[in-house]
Image (cartoon, rainbow, N blue to C red; front, side, top):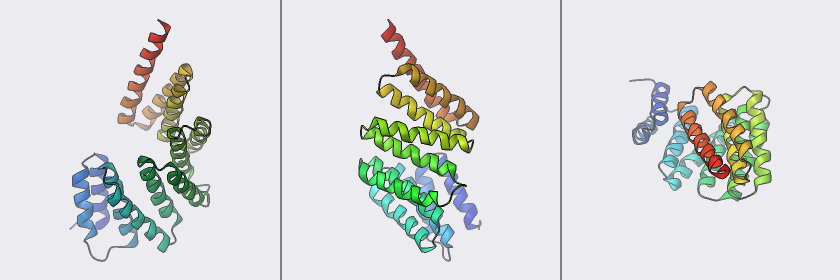
Amino acid sequence: MKKIQDRIEAAHQLYVDKNFEEALAEFNALDEEKKLSNRHKFQIALNKGIIKMNLNNYDEAQHDMESALLIGKKTENLYKQARALHQLGILAKLRGDYDNATELFREELRKCSSLMPSYYSDLSYNFYEQGDVKMLAGDFVDAKMYFNHALVFAETETNYHGVGLAAKALGRLSITVNCHKEALEYFHKSYENFKLAEDQESIESILQEITKLKESMHDVEN
């Protein structure tokens, strides 16, 4: 039998490859194993929650994520707590519960801040999510502030994916406030960084947004 950690990594790869049902089945099987360490229990619970969130099974996803958070608290592991809070924040955002999402991301931020200076990328993703919540709630000024913070933290740690994500968000925000040329600059920055991150899915996505924006700008000019 494979070692538990090997099986967890293989199941996680199934999730990365978007084979959600297969991944969940493997994590459910892993959950039945005896003598799991707290580390393994945390990984299994959090992964199950994330997969169920992707399958739109929000109630069960929340249960699993809260289980992961509880393990983080019991073991007094701030990083595990931060990871679980981040996913719970995303789940609240998807449910449209923006106040709760903001509070969860702020609680994550408090955990991350005490782990400084080693977690700039985590801070970047946290600020990105807080910005996204603000943008969805129509607070464009605060959204821009958070996205800019996300960009700076990602650049500090040379996290190309984080830079690409923050720049893409700033581009979308610029479109929302009718600053199309600025949006195009952000989108090109996003594209260059996704290329450096070798994230093909994100590259294709931003190229589509660039094409759509250019067509929109062309129509306005004519």
